[in-house]
Each structure stands twice: as C-alpha cells, then as structure tokens.
Image (cartoon, rainbow, N blue to C red; front, top):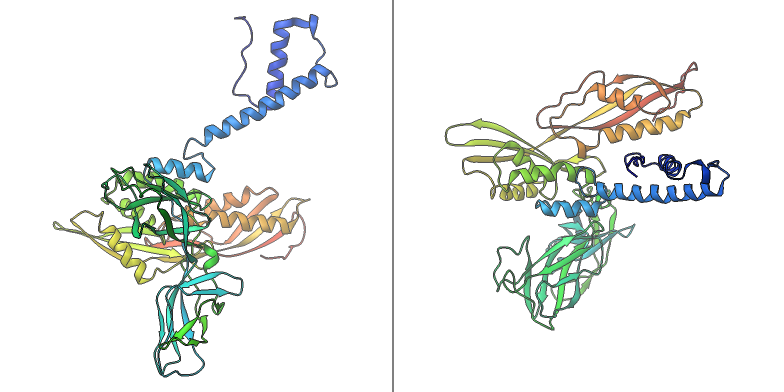
Length: 481
C-alpha cells in the first residue's frame, strides 16, 4: 500500500478527481480486471458521478473555510458574527430626515396641532414620521416640522418565563432602531452590553442581523434584571431606513393622522416637503465592514492617533467619511480638526452633515479622546471626477454592451465605500480597469489626463462618463453614455 499514488487534495476540480481515481484503480487492480476507461463505459459513468459528488462537496468545504475568516467571508451574517468577537457593530440602515411644511387653508382663531409621531406618506407609500408636535399658531397658516423616514411600532414579543438569559425576536424585519421595552408597567432601557450592569438594572441588549431582524437579550439576575415571570414584554422599535428614503421635493403629500384645534375639533391640513430628504443610508456594505472592523479593534476603545478619530467617527451612525488633521500641536494640547461627510440623497454620493449630527458626533468623541486633545468638527468636501475618451473594441463585440461594462467598471472603481478623503486617483488604475474589460483593444483618456491628488479633506467621487466607442478599423460609433 505504501507504493500507491497519493491523491492530490489541491487539484479539486472534476477532471482531476477522475484522473486520480483512474490512476488509483490501475495501481490497485492493474489492467486484468478493468482496462476500459472510455467515455461510453458504464464504470466510467459511475466514476464520473462519484467525481461530481466529490467536486461538489469539496466546493462547499472551500466555501465553509472562506466563511471563517473576515477577509474572505462573503455571507453578511457570518461577517456580523465575526465582528462580535472584536466588539465592532456594523452600521445599520439609517432613516432620512426632511423638513415638512404643515399648512391649513384658512386662518383659525386657536392653535392647530398635528401631534408628534404623526404618519405621512409619499405617493409610493413610503412612510415618514413627525419628530415633534407641529403647532400652527392662531392667526398663522403654516409651520415647519422635522420628519424621519420610517415608522415607530409597539408590539408584544412574548411573555417572561422567569428564567435567566431570555431571548425574544421582533415580529417584523426592516428594523433600524430599538427604542425601549415595557414590562409590568416599567420602562426597560436598551444598552450596548450587560457586562457592567447590576441585578436591579432594568436593561436589555438587542442585535440586528443580516436580514434586519432584531433579537432581544435579557440578563441573568446578576448582570441585568430578569423580567418578572408571566409578565408580557412590549417593545417599541422603528422600521424603515435606506437610500430609498431620500425622496425628491414635493413627494410627501399624504397624511394618515388627524390634526385638531385647541378644542379638539378635527382640522383638515396639508403637508409637503419643499426640499430633498437626506441622510438615508443602506446598512454598511461588506467591503466597508472588512475595512473598518480591524481598524476599530486597533483603537482599543480610545482615540489616540488620527486614525483612531477617523475610525470612531466613521463608525458613528450617519457619518459616511471622516478625515482627522492635526491643526496645531503645543505643549498643553493638540488641536485636531475632524472633517466629516454624510450620505447623499442618491447612491454613491455624499453630502454636508447638519449641525445636529456634528454636535452629536463631537459629544460622542469627547468620551474617548485624550485629555490633552481639543477636537473641532468641520465639513468635508468632495470633487466629482469626469471620465471621457476614446475606446476601440474587437470585432464581434457590441459597442452598447461595452459602454455598459465601462460604466459599471468606473462606478465600481469610484465606489465611495472603498476610498477615503485625501486619497488620490491614479491614472494608471483607470487605464488598467478599462483595459481589463473583455473586447477592449485600446483606450485613450481625455479626462482625466493625469493622476488626481485631492486636498486632505476632499473626497473624489464619480462625475460624468462620456466615451466614444468604435470597432477596430471602422468609423467612430458615436454613441455616448
């Protein structure tokens, strides 16, 4: 047996398995018992069926091995589970914000009130929720109020059995935030961790999975109070979020709730949004998680270096990009200016953050910064990069299809999730990306014509794309995109 050929477990494709099996059969049995390995042989058919099953199993083994490492994992839930090990929480979907104008047709002698939490809708059925009471003062015709995309729900998720470490699932998907829980008339608070809680703390934790479903976890009576036995658990949470919430002006026109005057009489009101809704964002992409999770672990829960500030800021909900610059160093303090951008109204775009977001970010970072650091939050900038030029393609390729591939290639190249403020765009990377498209023989760029080096606080984003495509040896195709 020692002289037998060993299988090559690196060659895992179907044909390699068939070849290894044939070699092993010949060595064990020789040509006396089986010497016909032609395609039409019944034994060869069984051999290839076995190789197919083995090839399939080895493929799944490879996939399973890949899913155990953050750089190679592709399944979102596996990536979320690995992030738990290093204390990193991928950013959830974020709802957009918008200013709503609430108006009435004629002046009233008393105040008209549309209560906080009133539900508004677009013509497509997308729901928004007012964030405070909209009060039209007596003698006035309108008032502005902030609204957020999504809807607040309150539902019973189960009944406590009085045991430690109880778990409950929320009944709906699309969760963006857990607000609180009510148990036996008491309000319970959602926290990041139960580790530092006492036996009397009425708290719980929540996790949102890859399918945007939420699971709640309660304590064991030592780290977090156990919900009293046989008491119902009612949870308030919000659903919604995503880029879909960045709706155009004058699209939020339907109101699902009722406005009243001071005497409780129903009043007919109209609503609309005069500006774009902004700030809505999809859950953090897999590419972004793989980039920022290791950097977050390196911070060890404190801000010391410039990279630490950028990592904490980027992990803050609503922040898309952050760049920290040491503006001044002295013996007493370091003045650090942090430039930030939020998500734009459309995919793969950015926007200037509002003052509320910047104030909340500053308050958050002040908990982790060094005592000798003075932190300033400022707006970042962005610069669109326009792509244009001439492309020659091989015979047999459709120019329209090539144009579409160039468009997709440049969109992927300029994906904002993969680039940071101050990062240059090398002209060689652009040429390489287009040259690698099957069917492209030649490309000449007229824009950009050299490497683009942005300012420290500037992010390069995708601008326009305009290429002339023609077949080899033919007149210009003349179709732009």
